[in-house]
Each structure stands twice: as structure tokens, then as C-alpha cells.
Length: 592
Image (cartoon, rainbow, N blue to C red; front, side, top):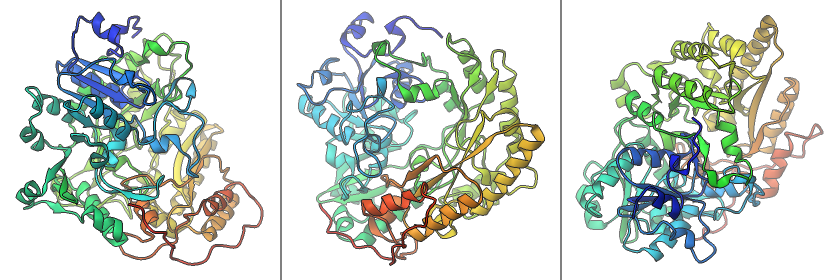
């Protein structure tokens, strides 16, 4: 676990390619993040998966898009295709605050330095590659491409944007987690760009003409065309409901969306990954370290946060309105085997700088490991966006026993002193149950002093729009947490996260939140102003001023001074300003 040579990483320079005796790469991956060879960094995962399938893969991290584009040429022309990703975050979320101010830092860059990726990185990188190598296919992947695969609201330009395929000129888009799909794409391109083969692959999106769309329209879900969405907010809202409904199905339909004389086609995804498939990904030979090129350039904060963490599963069935996890990873949980997790923990204990502390045993939500529907046929017919909102599905198996057993096995490994849970836990999965054994287990063994949870708000009308449980469950959690801490003789802190300016939230709601949190003696530290991110229910509410599922108008704090006033209630103990009245918003004309 202590690699010393650059050949332990995928090649990131021409010299490293030559050191392997290669004269050409099969696939070159571009990313907006620094290259960290760790299973929490998407480009590293895809690179290792393609390498394991027998392909020669190189990575170009954070290429300079401002100069003569030498970074885009340094590894030459790939035999098969270029892969392009903005990195682990949407580049606009990475670069700008909720108040549209340019950030002064970037956690995915050495030294936490800003300015190493462009706005709309996927589009910028692709256009440069298409200009330099017009005949080489470009395949998009990662969260920015995935969540912009269809018409979406872009907060930073305040416009309805078309699919990133239209904007960028890319040939193909692989959405969601690419463990299976990227290898199949490479195989389909083995003898050249075979459009017929590629169009038959699951979990890809591509541009086709009207004739192709007409041929596949039977059994497909046809969306309102882009131009209608720009003109009519109701059409845009209806599109979202159709898209989300399909994404929540175990066997969704193909999506078809028109753009002038072109059509974007989104094929249904692969089935949720099996335990064996997921174990195979985590067994790949990651060094778990940043590439040696970054030595002396400062720490990479995102890596420092997760370098001694272990991810237990993928997917989330919470369905929160503002969250992108289910839209990208899916709502069906794919869990690793205990053996796979334990092997990774044992590997961590052999790292030179490991001091015996695992910073996180978790996932998108820390406590959904091995949870699923008991009757798969019922899941096959279900279109609920959340398995637990407004109340848990009776078909949901939410047994924490497998997770508790895994915790105990991890604690028994030689070299592990403490194993903390850094991910947020869903307390609505165990607070509704009479036996809160899981909470006691976590407090007794897995809290570093602060336990993160996310009530997000205190007011019921706002929580319903967020698809979050009643704040009453948080009150009960706080009381149970206090009692268990007293019984165990520990002085731990419960850390709740809250959001201001969510659609439907007025200044009155923030006034009541401030009053309730002061009454409960809650310290408001981890708070944030709502940022509309593509392909979420909340972003559609923000853009249209309506609830897409009911058509009812909502108050939306759109102006930056409104958003700042709402956030100020987290910090001001004084008398709040007069609430903003009204239930509708005024929309300025859309820009095309």
C-alpha cells in the first residue's frame, strides 16, 4: 500500500505513457479534478475499470483551457475515444456560492486553490477536443454530464438550457455510475465508432434525427420539446415529473426529447449493480493516493477528508427534493459484501500514515446498507420518488442488523482503534421504531464527538416540499441522543444541518425556525443557502415558481438580498424583519 513509482498510477504524462512501452493509448480521460487514485474519485474508478478490461488508459487532470491547449494534446490521439468529466462535482457548484460569488478555493485542487477548472467544464473540454480532433469520439460522464443530460434549469445563467450533448457537441453520454457502461462503450468502439451498437446500449444518451425517434417511439416516454420548455414553465415542470417518474422505476422507459430537428434519446439504465459487481470495483488496485505530480503543491482537501473512509453502498431511496444522489446513483441500494469492506479496511491499516482511525464507515446515507424492498415485484411496479416519504413503504426492509454486524467486524480488525461515521444518518429509518438499538450502537462506538443529521428545516410546509420527515422526529432524536449519552457517560454533540431559501420557504418560516432552534438550544453551525442544482425537484420549483406535482404556486426567494435575509436568521438573535408577502413570483423573460 506504499507505491513509489509513477507506474503505480495510470499515466498522466507522455513520459509515463512511454515508460510503459506504449506508443498509443486506447482511451484518454479528462477531468476537472486533480488525479487521486482512490475509489471515491470517479475518474480514477473509471480508469481502473477500463484498465482491468484490458485497455490502455491515460488521465489528463485539470487541463489548462486558457493557453494553446497543449494539455489537450500531450497524450496524443486515443485509439478509441476521449472521456470527459467535470469531476466529482458540477463545475458551477464547485466554482460559485449560492449568492453567485466566485469561490476562492477548490477542495479538489492541490493547495485548495481556485481557478483550475472552467465554468461548464464538460462543455469547454469537449469543444476544445472536437476542435483539435474532430474525428475522435467524445464520451461524457460524471455528475455534471449526468444531471444535464436533458433540458434543465441552470441557476448560474438563470436560463433553461438544452442537454449538454447539444451544447458540447459530444458523441455520447454515459449517465449515472459508469462501472458497467464504460466498458461496454469501449467494446462497442473496438473496431471504430459503431453508432448502431452504441445506440443499443443501456444507460447512454445520444443525439438522433426525427426518423430514428419515430422508429423507437412505441413504448418510449416522449417529453415536451426544448423550445416548449423555454416558452412555458408548465411544460418544463411536466417534463420533470415524467423524467423523475421514470428514474424511480426499476424498469424505466426510453426518454425522447426534441431540440429543433434533432432529438436527444436517453436509454434506460442497467439494473442496479449486484454485490459481486460492486465488490469487483472496490477490489481494483487503487493506490489510494494523489498522483506524485502533486508533491510539494499542498494538500488536496477533498482527499484529506476521505482518505481513511470506506464507502459501504451506493444509491439512496430518501428522495430529498434538493438532492442529486438518486438522480445520479439511483434510488435502489447496491451494497458491498462484508468481505469486500473488511479487505479494504485491512488494506488501510497497512498504509504508512494510518493512525488507527477510520474517518467514515458510510455512504450517500450512512445507514441504508443492505436495505431494499422485500417483494421485488412490488418494487417493479412502484414509481414513488422516496421509499420513506411521506412515510416508510411497508415493503421496505429497514433492518440495521447487517450494518451493526459489519461495524463490529470492522472494530475487531487489528490496527483499527476507532471507526467513526462521518456521513449523515437518516434518523427517520430508526426513530419510528420502538427499539433504537442502532442509535445506541452508533453513540457507544462510532461518534467522534459530533453526530451529523439533516432535519433541514423546522416548518412542516417547507419540509413537505423538501420531502423530509416532520421535525417532531428530530425533537425525539435529540431527546434520545441526550439520554443515551448520559447513560453511556459521554458528552457528544448532535449536529443538525439546515437550509434557507428553499422554494416555499418565506421569511416567516425562517423566523419560526430561528425561534424553534433557540428554544431547543441548537447551535446553528452547518447551515447553507439553497442552491438550485440541475435535475432536482427543488431546482424546478425555483425556476417555475410552482410545485410540478400539484401545479400550485410557491413563494420563491429569487433575489440575492432575499436569500441573504433568509440566511441571516441562522445567526441573528434579534427581532426578524417583516416577512415578504405573496405566494407568486415575478419572472423576468427567459433567455434562450
